[in-house]
Length: 420
Image (cartoon, rainbow, N blue to C red; front, side):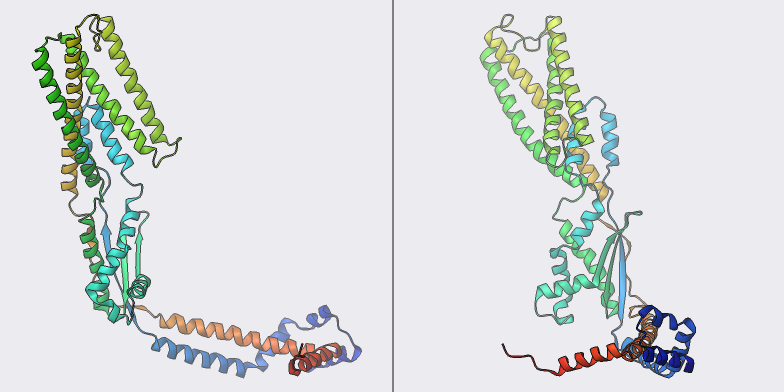
């Protein structure tokens, strides 16, 4: 240390001000010697910091965390798939089911349930049930809601698909009650919403079934009026089969067109599902055209030109064709509506509780050991940096040019600003 001071004095006397020359004089051993010279200051600083960190760590309020694990319902429909496989040739039912499950379904159901659990309706209900405005000492509901959101963590597992809801509170019993309260309020909310795929399909096909019922009734009334005015005409078995086949295909085409129109509201033009639906529509139209062509070739045109049938007969055929079409649509919708009801009954509760929240027996925070260790390490680095900073400042202030600069800085600091 004495040798270092002699070298520093020599540098100052000779007017050597090269920064690289001064830095090279401070070696690793010089740094160790410098720290040992100020070891008492460093130890005192670290000790005081550790004591203060310990006091603060024990003054911080203890928080407990309680967690509930939920299993959201699967979005696939096993009963619907089984019945669809048994229906075989009922293609329109398949296209309508694809419409309800594809366009109304969601890509990630767990994210939807997480958002519902975080909804303002659920949060406000929890606040009211547990009188959290008074517990959190907040005057406004919005502030209480923000405080509750800070204490609550809701995540969905990417691998297992489970939803984990954790609530922190200073009271371990209330932490468990709040976590379970979230689930109860969510169930109350979901009871009034069609969340699952089956519920969405049931609502969709229920509305479509009512409309189809009205159209079928109108078609039956029109057919009855036509029979009264023209009498019952005898239609050949081949023509009747063609009309019934065409009516079924018309129902499939109508369902597929509705499906494509609905998919365009959320899918891009190059979406694979949309492209597949367009291909299926083209195939159905081609099949319908093929049936019409085969009817013409066999002399039993499903359109029955006016050259073969009287005007009254044409009206009868039109009414008969419309009636068969409406019957096919109504039958398909009724079957799919029953499938959706079975699926909804099978799903039962919207979410299932895998692990209910229990009263925690271990605090979640503060982590006193980590706080004390972190504060001790940080204070050690801070004290070391302060010693090095003072040493560097002392060496710099011994140079003549730096002394002049420091004197100028002091004078400028003490001087008052001139009035404009």
